[in-house]
Amino acid sequence: MVAELGLNNVKVDFTGCHGFCQQGPIAFVEPEGIFYTHVSVEDVPEITQSHLRDGQPVARLFYIDPVTDQAVPYYKDINFYKKQQRIVLRNCGRINPERIEDYLTTGGYQSLRKVLFEMTPEQVIDEVKRSGLRGRGGAGFPTGLKWEFCRNSPGTQKYMICNADEGDPGAFM
Image: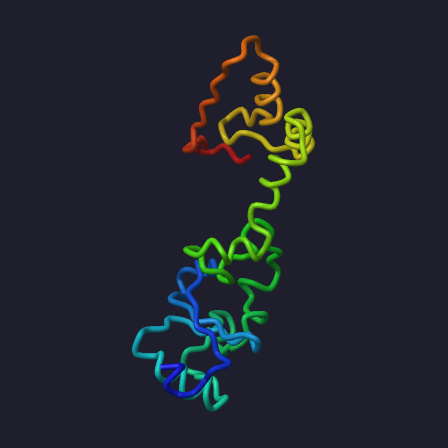
């Protein structure tokens, strides 16, 4: 539809979750920062023609603030997002999670490259220890110490087992 309307300067893409799941599906229009909520396939022609072609955002799809009952068209003005400083999840809703190229262009795997090609195993362990990273079990044991114990254990062949479903109920690490 974008191409049919001659909107060659418009790029439509899929992204991961924006974190405000109860308002989805969401459409986010940049560079203005217009934030549409509860978007359906039937809404796409109206958004494309009214907003993208004619420059008139579709007000009926704006977020409605539950406290003020007012429409909030801009992402930056929505209370849910206002005070967030996304670090780990900074690219959620910004890149397509199914395209590795998107991740790479935002600096993805740079830390892995550094660990593999620029650091010694001891430096990696020291970095993890300095980070304060802890296990998610009830004890919250320091991950760097676990790695150091493994590295310093006798023998040449070693095994590390990861419980990827760790996290005791009530253990707030």
